[in-house]
Length: 488
Ligand code: 9MR
Image (cartoon, rainbow, N blue to C red; front, side, top):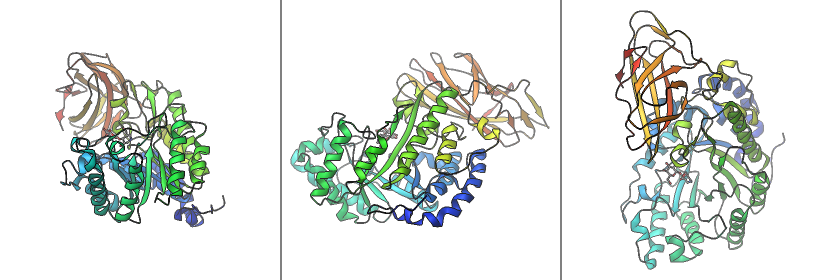
C-alpha cells in the first residue's frame, strides 16, 4: 500500500514504510498474544504500521487489575480516561481542583509508552450541580477557568482533548445545556479557543455519538465544523464515539469520515463497542467480528482517520450491561480477558495473521454452546485448596458478577465445579466462561473445555448476569469440587 499524502497526513502515516518490517514481526507475535490474551506487541504495533493508533479507555480502578493491564499495555497505544478527567472529578466545587485520578491514568500511560486522549473539558453530563446552578452571567467565566486550569495541568501530557463532548441532540439541534443557555452556540468556539490558548499543541476535538453515519446529527456536526473552520477557530478533529448495536455499523461511515476530513479536520473512532443481546451466540460473535472489521477498514480507508479506540478493555469493564439491560459482550475480550473473534478480525483488518491454533479460538468461545464441560473433575497431586474473589456490579434490577477462582493447592485441578448460593430473588440470565445450573438458589458452575485445568497457582474468571428483586449481594461462600474456598 502506498504512503498516504495530503494536507491531513498524520505524522505516523509517513512512517509506514519504516513500520513495514515491524508489522511482519507483529503478525508473528500476535499469534502469542491471541493465545495468551495478555502479552505480546499486539494491536498497537499493527495499527502503527498502518499509520494509526489503537486505543482503549481505562478507569482508575482498572489499574489494579493485573489481567486487565496486561492486555491494555500489550495491545493498545492510546488511553482515554473513562471518567477521571470529567468535570465532576476535576472540579467538584467551584475553584477546587482534583487531578489525582487523571494523573494516575497519565502516569500509567507514560510508563507503558501510551498516549492519552483527554476526555473531556465541557459536557452536559457528569457536570457538578454548582455549574448548572450558576447564574447564566457567570457560566462563561466558570467554563473558561475550568478549561484553562485543566488543559494547563495536562499541557504536554495529552495528545488531544475532547473539548466539547456530545453537543448535539439526535435531530441536529444543539443540546440546551447550561453552556448553551448562557452563551448560545458561541460556547463551542469559545471553549476551543480557550483550550488552544492553554495547550497549543493538543489536538482539539468535538466528540459525539450517532454521528458515525450520514444523518441529521452528523449533518449538523459537519455544518458546525465548516463554520468553525471558516471563522478560524482552532479545531483539529471530530470524534465518532461508535457505540454500535450488533449488525448496525452504518454503511455511510466511510463516506461520512471522508466528508469531515475534506473540511480539514481529522476523525477518530473514540469509544468503539458493539453490544449484543445476551446470551451471545457464536453467530453473534461472528457478526461482531464483521462489525469491528468494518470500522477498522473504514478508518484505514480514510487518510485523515488517526485511530480507533475501544471503550474499555474487556466485556467485564464495559458500561453496556449497566446501561442497556440484557445487552453486553460488546468488546474484543471476554470476561476472562481472552480474545474473542472480533479481536482476530481486527488483527486481520490491520494486516496481521490469525492463523492461530484452535486453542486461541476455543478460548474466545465462552458464549459458544459447543464449549462443553469436562466430564470428571479430579485433582492430581497432593493437597487441594482454592480461593475465590468476586466482584458485583449492580443496577436497579440487574447485576453482573465476575468470579475469579484460584487453585491455591499443590495439585493440578482437572475439571471443576464451583458451588455457591444466589441471594433470594436473583435469577441468572446468562453466564460466561462456565455453564451454570440452575438459574437460582444453590447453583453449580462447571468449567468449559478451555478452562478446566488449573495448575497450582492458576486462576480463571467466570461470570454471570442476573436479575434481582432488591438483594444484589454476592454469594457468601464457594466450594470448588466440594471443598470450601477462602475469600480473596
Ligand atoms: O464509561 C463511562 C461510565 O463509566 C460512566 O458511568 C458514564 C456516565 O455518563 O460515562 C461513560 O462514558 C461515556 C463517555 O464519557 C462519553 N460517551 C458515552 C460513554 C458511555 O456512557
